[in-house]
Amino acid sequence: MQMKQEVETRRLDIKEQVENRRIDLQQQELLLKQRMDDEKIMNVDLTQLNGDQKIFYSMLQKQIIARRLGSGNT
Image (cartoon, rainbow, N blue to C red; front, side, top):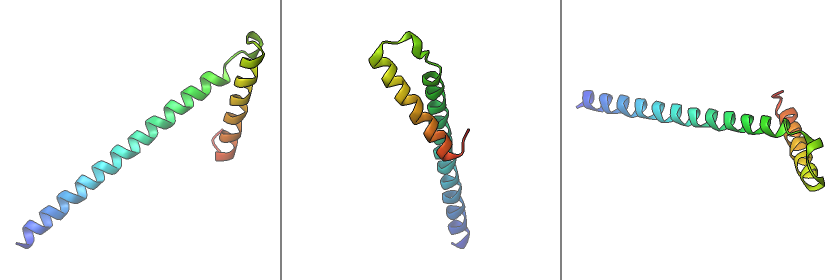
C-alpha cells in the first residue's frame, strides 16, 4: 500500500512540475510578444504621422521607456 502512495505522490509531483513549466513557458511567450510589440511601437517614425497619431505613439513610446527603465530591463 505504501508503494502505491509513493508512486501516486511522485506522479502528482511530476504533474505539478509539468504544469509549472507550462506556465513558465506561457509567461516567456507573453514577454517575448510584448517586447516585439514594444519594438514595433518604438520604431514608428513620428515625422510621418499626423498630429493625433504623433501624440498617441509618442505617449506609447514614453510608457514603454518608463516601463523598461522601471523594471531594470534595458
